[in-house]
Length: 139
Image (cartoon, rainbow, N blue to C red; front, side, top):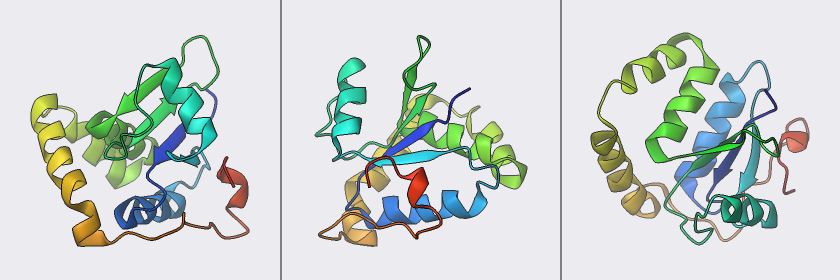
């Protein structure tokens, strides 16, 4: 499996915190990152018929640029990330996948709709540290 790519809203405080969380817990350096505002994300989303202007959705691209490339959205993307992190987080992802998707995505949409109000919004995308810069594909 190639490195999955986490596509996130680059100006969202919650999304930037999520990236920092993943960087801290991804001990195997599995994930790569790109903001939804990047040209890379635009090309990937276009291949899957997804709207790059929909900043309320986090995506994970599994097997990018491979014939079996898949795009996971919302709670499916979050569950995939948790499972890849392993340990307690993997167990959490395993348990969450048994909840009906419509309920998971409803909860996801409520948080997504209010994320700027609760977690803030920055004028620029998060800049990774020099040690993690290589994992960000649009820097």
